[in-house]
Each structure stands twice: as structure tokens, then as C-alpha cells.
Image 1 (cartoon, rainbow, N blue to C red):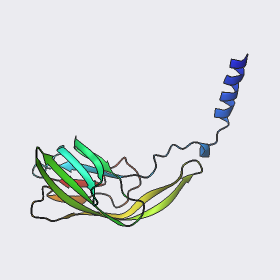
Image 2 (cartoon, helix red, strand yellow):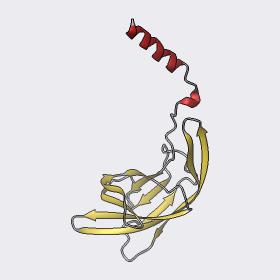
Image 3 (cartoon, rainbow, N blue to C red):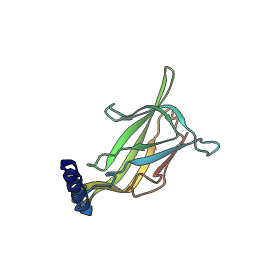
Length: 154
């Protein structure tokens, strides 16, 4: 009898939830970045890629991938990140400057706010030994993680 009562109460609780009581929004999106071979223009994985913040904190741990999602800060309008190619003892860091305008967007009572980014732009900072050939922003608005925002050719 007690089990039946608990089941009934659980069903009533679930049915009585309003849409705003449940958060299904994924939250603040990151920059969906896809890597391409600079010669063939085909999608290609980067071996042993590490992404670091300007102060040296690891943003993305060593990974072999052809795409990743890079988080942006919710405050400020510019950040530089280091994309470090590692091969054995060889490390070649390249810096990419991201510029954007963060905007708070109310989602719902349950989710609260998320940050979307407008006026997004990215540029490679030239150095003596760039392994990245070019950086091409694909979208100027970042409001979800389901579409490509940035193409990197190497």
C-alpha cells in the first residue's frame, strides 16, 4: 500500500511540473572548431593538440581530434588562446585571438541565463614558426554547440 502511494505521489509530482521547472537548455555555448588539411582542404585530425589560456592554464588536454569546442569567457570581449601542436619533444605553440561581444540571454526560470556571443571574430597571431596556416570564422553569432563556428587550416 505504501509503495502504491509513493508511486502515485511521484507521478503527480512529475505531471504537475511546468515547462519552466525543468532545464533542458545546454547552457552557454563554446566555439565549435574544425581542423582542415591546408593543402587538400579536407577535414583532418591534429595529433596531440593542447589548448592553453594565455596564462598557461590547460583549456583542452592533449587530444587527437579534427574538431573541438572551445569555451569563451563570459566577461570581457577578447581572449587569446594558445594552440600547441605536440610531436614527441617538439612543441609548436600558435596563438589565436578571439574577439566577441557577450550577451546575457534569459532562458527560463529553471535554467536562468546563458551567454551568447555576437560579433565573433578570430585571427591568427603571426610568429616565426606558425603550424596553423589560416583561421577562418564561419559564424559571427555563437548561440549553440551544434554548428561550426571556426575553421582552422594547417
